[in-house]
Length: 239
Length: 239
DNA sequence: TGTACATCAGTGAACGCGCGTTCACTGATGTAC
DNA sequence: TGTACATCAGTGAACGCGCGTTCACTGATGTAC
Image 1 (tube, each protein chain N blue to C red):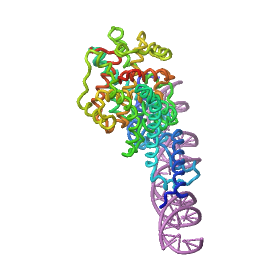
Image 2 (cartoon, rainbow over the protein chains, first blue to last red; image 1 turned 180 degrees about the vertical axis):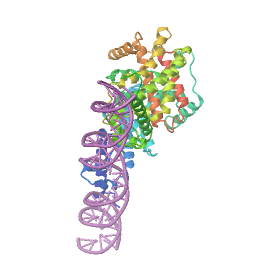
Image 3 (cartoon, chains in turn red, brown, orange, yellow; image 1 turned 180 degrees about the horizontal axis):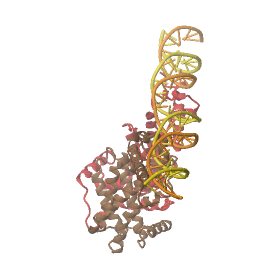
Image 4 (tube, chains in turn orange, red, brown, green; image 1 turned 90 degrees about the vertical axis):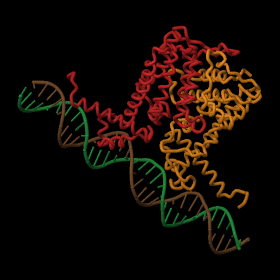
């Protein structure tokens, strides 16, 4: 066992990547449900059974693709947020939101793999959750920072007749989430961020899956507007 | 040609329905991508080619299922909203939101057919759009009524440092939507309703597709809370 | 450094399935006179 | 009312495809002495 990678190891790593990138290309044509090992093998000029040296089954390949895609969108969002770190929490939040949409539009089929209809018969193993949490974590970070700097407001609750208290179970859930991703952040702020998170992905999903066709098309301005509105709702003051 | 339906006509209508309901049952097991005419025929005890007397192709069957599903969720939302008509606009709005979630949870695979990943290779024909608009229309109706009764507020804009004006293209789009679904309703109100609409479906989609697993599970309280928050955001005062 | 053995990648055939769609046909139902 | 003809539902075979997975195998690469 040496530290230097043998030719075999290098070949294996490279071919593993090639299989995954071929699979990604095929996702674009067929959708995850009909992703075909035989078609991948064909495109790579291999015999289909050879793929079993790399992935023990179709589901394992799918899992690898899902983890890669979660990591890709997570990294994109983290990078966008970090790039404007100096500009303040609201800038980081909006940069992260934009990065979600941009990545989704650039990789619609991988986005569908993550956030679209679950693949029938496939159950995601536990391995995917850490990668899946990167986007929510990246969204929560600037909210957390703003909170710690005492620059987070709750505009809605203060302006409306009867502010709504968080139901107790939701408080617990928000507390759990804060404990893992943003220790010390108030449950109210977590709940607001969750609502903004679902709005963001609802909007991107509708755009990609065609619900906006006709009415809100192109969606650029709607996206920008909704994002600012939700940043307000979350309580992020102008930087 | 008589007004009385012949035995043939009745048999045809019944079998058409049976084919669709069998197809719906199979959606639950396989997903729309692998919906199989042969499997449907098998379950009905027919030969697969016989289905071509009823639907000229697999895509036409899919279209019929999609239209039926849009009409089903549309009717459910309209009924829920109408049932509390006397209670005021906010009650109608929240009843409509709850009906979306309830229907989605009762018919997860039909929901996925409408709002999930588009079926690869399938292009929805124009026939679906009228049915698809029923839910947005039903959501907009109480907002419109509240607006006409001068009981619609814009809490966020008034309480924040710098209220955001609608970008011009979004104003046009909102105007178009209002012209069709809610003549006279302000563009600002339409934009708010659109944001709430995307939040609602983002939340329901995440719940059904498993993004809440672990963190916000069960989602009942989160749903109720988010719905009230968005009703506030839309500007619907307590009835 | 050279050789013997172990590891592993990739082959090719096979198993046992599945699919949408077309076509010529039989036999029942409906219609016009 | 009865008969001739037209319409239509459903059959069964066929075309030409596709799939995931297993298995015994060849031959190249890597390792230990």
